[in-house]
Image (cartoon, rainbow, N blue to C red; front, side, top):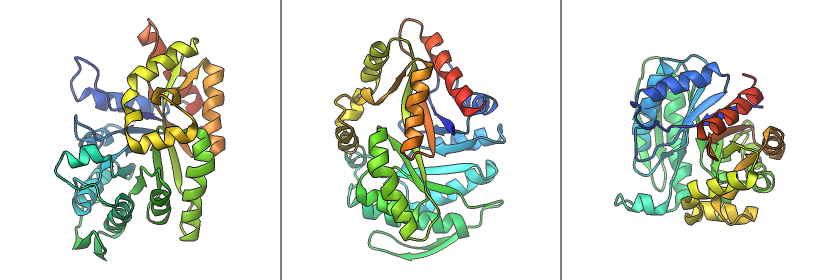
Length: 306
């Protein structure tokens, strides 16, 4: 199985630089990739650039950088720099984020599918060739840069709805999902993006599924903990639609929980559904939080071949 880690949490009392050590540790443990979100803490790409200097094999991804606040030219130049420092191991995850957060910045959350199609078109041109001349409805960009040691970087989109998946298949390298179940991936996500890519004459896209994972003998307890941790996601319309499609009430119920055999079977189900990689957001449950976290990590490491 291709297993990555969805991390980015700095442990209480630890310095920011400790996250670089964590990423290096995950490389040594054999994980295929390490992903961090761009949220209200540190700058994700800056952190990955630092981690790139301390690692040599593990892919480094963002899941995801919100697009509306950053012009695609500025993000492309930053990503090209990070990719050069990572030796070509960056996977740039981008997405429109959610209306409340974008509008709180004084920006319009307008026509997200068209926005992402044009945004990624500019990103890919600059990442692949270092220049772009694009005249669209939302972006008109004619510019370029020459980053030393630059090489093309992969771009994946947080595509959930049909129009977004179509755009991701046609102009990006794949999708990275969150709060999406295996039935939805099998019947909606994977076939839609694969068809869009094939119709556009592009290579088969990546379908990267980010999931909360907890190895624990008491499934009910582990699920209840996930419901507590991830409750807020069920209030966001983009995620709510995916949860409803899966027949899930509380967002935390999407979590993959159970003993080692049960979690292995559930994760295999995602690959059978069309996921090309699973990135695990490990969370603890029960009285022994450290033991729970270590047990989950050990299973995922074994599945990753580490």
